[in-house]
Length: 285
Image 1 (cartoon, helix red, strand yellow):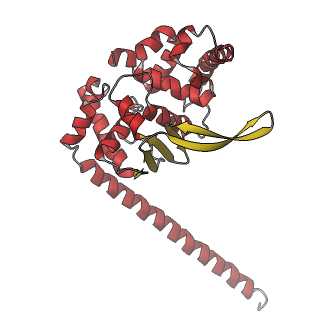
Image 2 (cartoon, helix red, strand yellow):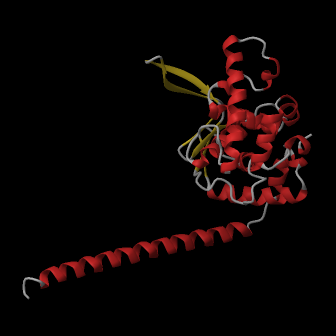
């Protein structure tokens, strides 16, 4: 009997320890969710300031949204600017920067049934101008350090935006929009891979991949020959970098040059229209 009791005491003690630890863990989760919900309740009651709308009225996209979509994106913007950390490098972050970045980020998701944009994104870093970075690239097994000028970047729950470029592109309808581009990468990565295929229903996967690769392969051929660009001038050579950049560049064109994209690449346009759930060629005439 004496030889059995120590074993029983040990297992009871072990069970008690795991019970206590489990209780503490679930209590922590409960209070963490409680705090998060209370914070969201507070954010939901925050007003959309008049000066915020003044910034948005300068953009060619906000003015053309339906009133109900304007109201919807205002709430998304409020959530975005109060749940992300904005860091200025060499500049003071202003309300204008926050509102414009939040607007174009959330515009990509305007067709989705959610007021919350980019839950996993934590930080927005803003530079005044394009940034020079160093990167190691491989060419046939030979590695070389190179310098690149970037206007934006998306990685590790962080998006980098250069304000000079972003501001110029946000207030004028052009082919390019660095905010749209970088947040397209964020959307691409929502399924765990940045591969040019955003989160899709299984039934739509094959059609998306077939259309994307057909146009990407054709663009790659043209880039290599550097002639007879034709309609592919609309996409430019950067879209041929890889599948992820192709997705991001075409996203820019879908929102910035929708009529041209629909005219020259109707299959691509339909795939993007179906994914983003918005007919940009009709809305942003």
